[in-house]
Length: 143
Image 1 (cartoon, rainbow, N blue to C red):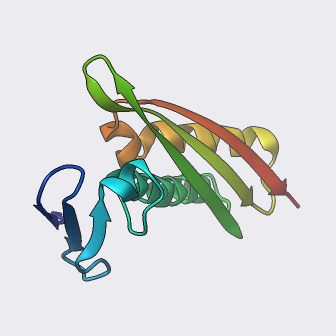
Image 2 (image 1 turned 45 degrees about the vertical axis):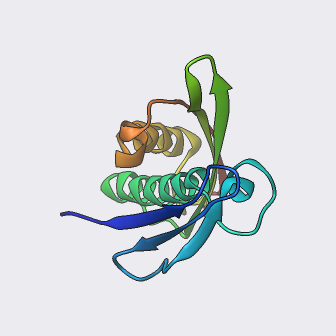
Image 3 (image 1 turned 180 degrees about the horizontal axis):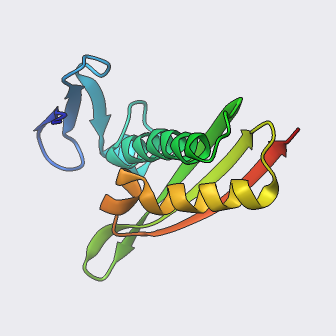
C-alpha cells in the first residue's frame, strides 16, 4: 500500500506560501505558510496534519485491539497534540500527547488500558515518530 501527498512552496520562509494536496483529493491546494505554522494564520501546517494522522491512526488501532479482545466500541475519540520545539539543532517534534475517551460496552478498566497501551505502541504513526508519546485514556462507560 502506498499513499501520496504533495507540497509546493514559493518564496522565502517568512513571506512565502505553499499548498498541500493529497492523492485522495481530501486536501487540494490547501494553504500553509510561516504564519500558519508559527503564528495564528489561516491554513494548515505539517504538525497539525501529523496530529490528525496520529489521532486517526490511534483510534483505529485501539478499535482493532478492542475488537481482537472481543469488544465493540461505541466510540473512540482521540485528540493528538503535537509539540514543535526549537532545539540547538533546529526545530523538532519532541512530544505527542494523546487524549482518548471511549465507550466500550462490557470492557473493564484493565482490558481497556491494556488495549489503549498496545494501540499507542502499535499504531504505525506512533512507530514513525521520533518523539515522546504520552497518553491519558478514559473509559467513559462500561456495561
